[in-house]
Image (cartoon, rainbow, N blue to C red):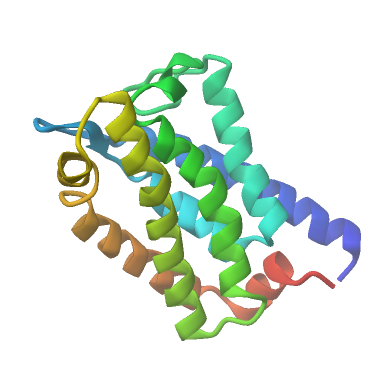
Length: 184
């Protein structure tokens, strides 16, 4: 397989995953006691990390974040602009930019189940590590209240999304996996 074909495939995949992250933001369910809604964005952030090499995973999420920052209404609540990044969900958005390449690094180039599961868990942990403290600061919440409002109600769904991501990646044909992941 030529390097040009592999690069084109990765550009396409990174763009599609950025678009899916945007679609995941539109599928949003508000929670009365939390400023953060339930979204599908993190499923696609995890998939970017599992399907692409680290730099490409980062570029996919970064493209989504830049488009949202310049004002396209692709962030949760069909909104956009820099102000969104300063709000209660800004930390989660920044966490996505770290979670995707970290997930890719942890997953490695071989499709090994324990590495894939560990990579998904790392994505979830990193997203909360950025999101919950940011939420606490922006919303002036004590740490416990921020955990209750910004993590506890979302964790079961995030685990379910992680399982879906693992199943999707495991179902991918080996040749497709190698085309997307291989650094050769």
